[in-house]
Image (cartoon, rainbow, N blue to C red):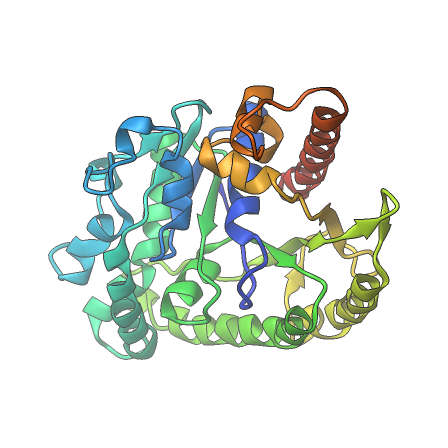
Length: 342
């Protein structure tokens, strides 16, 4: 059965989309068939996915495949009770075989209104809003069955609006990306409680669906792990003290706020005592270089460094070797996330 996963934090700037893309690539390289779903109207995942396709560099060029908005539109308009997943065309990555995308769409921001209305009205006898409420989860499950995906990984924005609620409740598991700073510390204080309240509201709505012949989705995502990232080190490996202080504060909030009775349910292999499933230090120039070529960070080739150097020359020897080491470290940390959701 296809597992639906999302990396989510209600704070922005935590490398969520970058980590999501690299996790999906690694899983595809492990012979897992993976679907990426770009649920963020900013469409950054879609840009990253198609960056390797030079013929699509023109912003006026139509992108292949069905967009998430076009896929959902028949339900929003009330033309279909359930989206026919067979009518949804997915795009396969040009380099990473087995990695597919349901692409984003700027117009998907309109879904905030549709999902918001469904969130408020699905508890009533309004059959249209009930069908809209379950439509996204139904679509993901249907795509997973039809295409035999091992994983569906959703990229969401940092908001806590109706689109995000719909996506997160449709997931089986969550990974929370973190950075060691004050703002992420504050976000972790509330994140578990916020999602817990979403789950409780979903259970109320779900109880009203069966009498109308609508099967509710589970709506109880579990925490599979967290990833601490974008911190800086000195002396080769020692984390800078300014980061460790916030790291320790966040660790305590994970134990007291993120998980527990009023927080997130956790997967059996998750330990609140050692909650950082992966730790990714600042990858510096690797991330923008990888984005230029539509590749995973751990798949940068030596010739790509021409675009990272100030004089357009390829990196060699003692300059290139640290890149290789950082790419391997990054792959190993992303693999820890892959194991966490497997």
